[in-house]
Length: 353
Image (cartoon, rainbow, N blue to C red; front, side, top):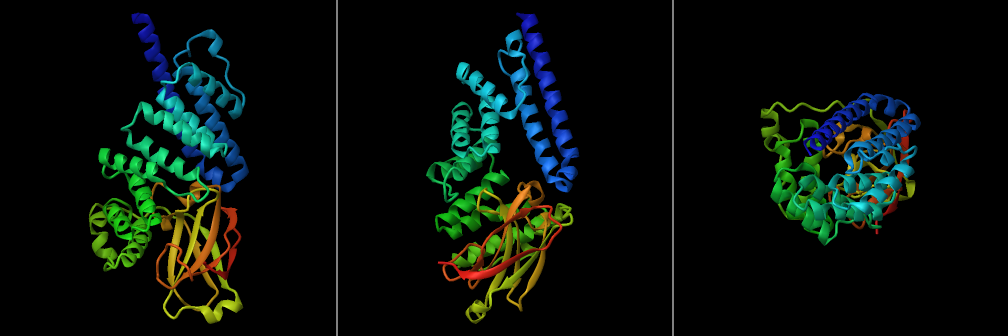
């Protein structure tokens, strides 16, 4: 019995050490991912495969049995093996979590949602898992909306960890989707004291848009960001960024509101509706040229440079609100590589219904 426990501890230690090495490798290869997205995507799949293989080889209960030592050769093979293992022993939290992440990587949003649900049954109070499961529920819907179950997950995550940034951000998005701007602003405002200075600027735009819709006075960045500044928060390294040129269709020039703001944003291609990077500018003569980078991200956990492909779009908002409103003028989204060196041109040519 003691020998078995010692062997299990050794395997667990090896798994943890290898996982740390994989994390370090992923971090080290991140610049290569940006420079060569095709190669980077291949490395990303390789890391996902290695993580699944590691779990199957060392983390699963039957890992020490000789017949279980065959390493999967592809991500699909690894997923199949993990599905088989979870059918045999469904009480593996990290197994379900890994499977959900693999499904997400394969674009199987509904399966990812269901796998996270299985993990939550085993660890219903884990705030990280609750936030991931809520996001998966939103991604599994056509409108990318957080339903009542997802909202309950996010609220429960914040009960366990009140300053869980990802859960707090998602809950504010859900409240905006539910036309509760005052609640969204209240949910987001505490984040201003913990996010970095560059992120606080974009986050404040989102908060003030929600406060305006709720009939509340706007916050100012010096006051809102005082705590973060006092804590010595530094602006994140922005990197070269994505150059965007915004043009206006001639037919819409007469429809420009007298008082309006122009939002230029990038969001994850095929992902949730919240932006990875967003800039707000006063209405001025077109064309408008901006550079979107990681410093424009409203949340530190969601960065432009971390998504190989993004959708770039622009919108003229009469209300000054970052959330789309009927009567706004907008462009069609354009999908590009996040590390593209070419200027992305988007044309505002339609009225939001």
